[in-house]
Length: 516
Image (cartoon, rainbow, N blue to C red):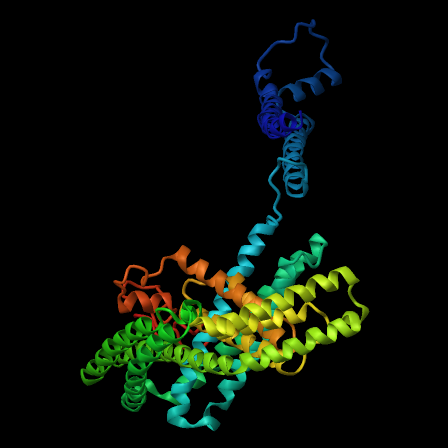
């Protein structure tokens, strides 16, 4: 019934319009009739018998000979009244249409965004601002190599301020995902806070973009910057060859899960270097031909490719070092785990667990340590995973993790966090807000002593899911440099050739190297 009432109201309102127009027209006709009537009666004879001549008769004769002021006044009053009524009705209808809040009637007030629309806006703001931070971070090392750390300090300060804003934005978003706050109005305000923090991060970077361009002076010539980029390219080309041998060694020496975090990294690094090679060549050719705009654009793209190749090669090198450190730490972690199990048996988990629960957890920890000892003698194993299992099993005893077991847990967390960070950095063109927020939470947890390992692994899993959904150009073994550059966020995919390269700056300035 309600819907039928809502549908009927607009039709009744529209039906009143012809009626009021009709009333106004009738009033006008009545007024016109009053004006015409005296003229139509001027020549007619009065049926009353003629009276003797006298003063009265002469006065009547004078009135019949013309139209008096009284005869004209009444029609004018009628016409004016009709016009006033019509105008009043129109103004009343207009005012009612503007202020009416009845359902089904269009109001002048703007529509309130839905919760889903607010969430989409917040997600997009997080991804955009985080990409701006990462793109800005990637350009600064090339500037520092040419001008020194002191010249780069103002831009580093802006970058750190933007990172602080992003950390706060991700923290608000994570609490929102967890249902905090619970009030609907407060949740809307939380999303507004996310967007506001992201906007401030972008503003900090935008404010320094012009000053960075003045410092670099690329429009006046790219020669010195090209030499820096080419020098880093040659260094990475040599490191990539060594990283390929390192990755092969990881597969021979450890279990498959140990090298899994960097599987395919060497191939992707080569792809980024191939892309950088073509961009460096085109930049030099453009500079020689006097096309400064194209030279700068290609140089920045090459710098982005070199920077990501460095991330990929560095990831292989770092994982190899962490696996060696973990392998050396496993025997000591086993000894430390046994000591904490003995402490739990003596003190009953410091009375925090019921006897039955404590007995079950002690049995589980004994089983984990026994399994790790077996792996040490059975062949290749994953040292980081062994430390992870030891630390988790001992932690469940609630006797206070310290000493060598605590050091093992920190090594595992750093490794997982670094792996997730590297993966997101080189695939940021496809990674969404959830993975980035989980990574930010893992970074905060690492500083607070919480379990950053679990959060970092969740961030990596979410990022890999996003890449699979987006489509990975490396999946079929036929990647191109351009596809990898777009996937990595080196190019912003805004133009047919892959778009402008991402540079230092926020949303307003990061794509300033666009085609003109």
